[in-house]
Image 1 (cartoon, one colour):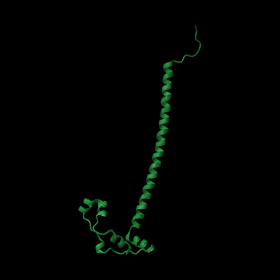
Image 2 (spheres, one colour):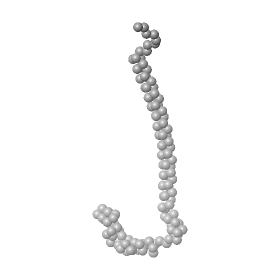
Image 3 (cartoon, one colour):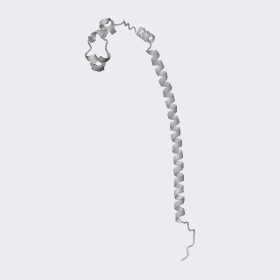
Image 4 (cartoon, one colour):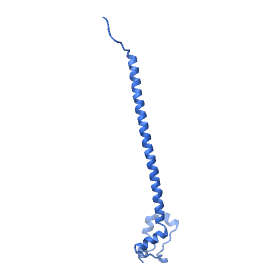
Length: 122
């Protein structure tokens, strides 16, 4: 029995298959790293933009809540406000806050609730 043809060693074929698989894995890993790098860059740019917008909004909010801005807004809407009378003021101590908590203070306030509403509409 004679064999005519090319004999390819099986261990060498296995080694080539492993090397090919590792090369494909290396290419996949490189592409994945590049994609993650691009995503990271995009997210960093987005974070910088959002930080800039947040600072801008904080600046606008600080300007809007200034006493002069509030006075202008009240005048623009025709709202006249005065300072509350002494009987309309409820003074709380730190002990009151710790004992009652915010909800309890509103419920058990010594001043009638109606007087607080009148102070806003006088």
